Length: 249
Length: 249
Image (cartoon, rainbow over all chains, first blue to last red; front, side, top):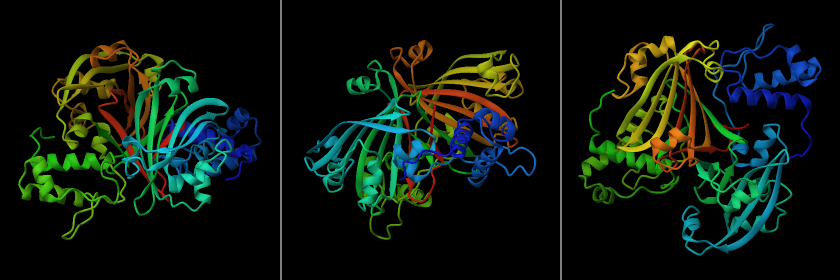
């Protein structure tokens, strides 16, 4: 993963991608004209065209063919990397990711940690508490837990240097699929201190489990976002089941 | 939509479906045996087999072939009906849906309502505030808004009798696709009173817009769930983009 700054066309593409996903431009809406976008971003027409071509390639907007491109009735999508890695997600959204590690701990798993990792009680796990930043602003509290065999790669890693996900990939860990459960939770004392909000403030919680291709859990995590920093969007079409599913408690 | 009670095999299937989606049974895990399931639900073996066959048909579990069925590495899915209709979603989850209408109102749209419906300011809209129940327990506060042309079907409808979605379908309204944005919000005074929780309690908010096939918005809504009643799950596979996407503010 390169940490090079985004090129200007990538920034414009990220802005438009976000606006489409958030419904600022709904399906069928035209995008602003090239000259309007050029003025908005202070960019040359060639840069704007490059950004628009990027979105066409992603299937988000129509070809235009001389007229303005329109937003397609498309399903918004998120890459697998972006689904598992805050660092990757930020970069694809044109945001500078940051992190402040609070602690990295090797400890015996209590039952609530052992169960989702399919470990016996008191098996050794590696846990991490990090504050994550978006463009230098506190945005999310990250609680990561790994079985020791995976977590040993984290113990030797400077968790303030960037993506643990990339570190695990580099170490050859098989990360095949992830499940995420999204709900709301009030800030606890740790969340409140790190995010600089009162205890009980509503947070968007994303609990994630990552598995090998054989179905062995290798991570169990809990990310809590300030809701003014992130939300989830999904589009459902008649006749097509949605891959995200609301579930009852 | 029939309101007939669920058959017993449907109840068992709904229970297992929810357990799979919530990760109680992870990919690769075996389901309990037929005799265990029979004891758990007090059901005959034929009923349990019917439930298991239903899940096989849905692609959620392996064929087993004499051995126990295992949970597949599958993407959980939600029907289009379930994505737009609380009533449909409850029924597919084995829950009895309920509603208590607080008011149905015809009013001029203020700018925050006009924009998502692509209406001019002060155009007439029909708005509904309902408390929704799951198995008779308060679970969600529903705020629905329709352009008058669609909402006229709601004005003549007993909104305590069931699904507005079904009413609109019966009236021939073209409901082609929906976008949903999921985040967290604190209960306001109305939410607090209806859900019987203190103001500021974290709620899971689902804002939805529904469109015709031409992209005309026909509904803009805001559903707020007690987080102990509902959450979202999604599964992402390496190499396959996810249709749900986290977006920055």
